[in-house]
Length: 390
Image 1 (tube, rainbow, N blue to C red):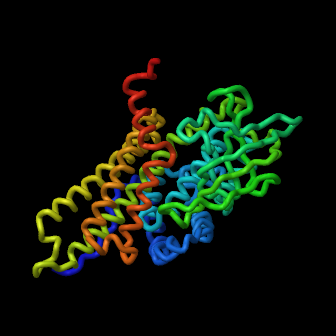
Image 2 (cartoon, rainbow, N blue to C red):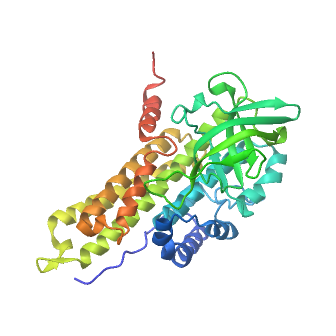
């Protein structure tokens, strides 16, 4: 049986413009991202120039209003762009998702003046963002965050530490959630903090299992002064703003997960058709064919689930439950598919000579970020059954 290269995913796209957009993304992937992905991930190199190229190409603000530098694309298109990028290199796909998450608060809750002043540079001016909610002592329990913002005339003074910040130390701006009032969710406010603000510093990046090219670091706020004009929304509205951003961000993680899973499936199919054992390709053996069939089904089911949630969002309908389902299913599927891809390749799959071991390491983090999958199950159950009783 001859070697068979994987075919591009057949996508259901709503317009000719969106089809041209996917073609552009695939061209950038083939020329600029995929050829260096393995080497740069192994070296732990952050590809800032790729994000500059994506910004110049109009790909960092796809889901936002063109009046402020966005692309006016529906979420179902934006997410499929993320999938293409993540399939080539998760550092890039996840990075675009995090940047979009960091823009959400200002784009949706900022004043007209704030959006006009800041969004064009954020969406298409070469800037890169990060989202600061988690802290060393408050991950899943985000409403218990301790970073404080204290009013000082027309300014706020922010002090505290944020943890697990993607793009920590390299971002140009941070959407920061800080406590301005009492305990709990109602005491939290959102701020837009410049990356070069005095008193803001980043710790050394975490040494991670995967995603080595994407810096994840603690951020220290040592009396960082931010004008009230950079407060987003009302005082005490920050936690609601954060949850709104996460509903959309979870769809980004789901799309990235399916991108990684698709890449692993493609690698497994290519290997299985080329690898000979017992005088024939291993793809001829029923046990392996069934494994590949299950992998492909997981990928297609995950893609259908995240797109269904995206279409609800695009229609202006509630989608939080479906976003949690998509994040849960797609990231669990990515973990299963990448693990099975390693099995298909056997001993070779366990070596760094083939990319499937990297895909497996990268898939694991997707079950954790932007709400662990245990939190997603809580969110889904709450929609089904109502709030928990004590």
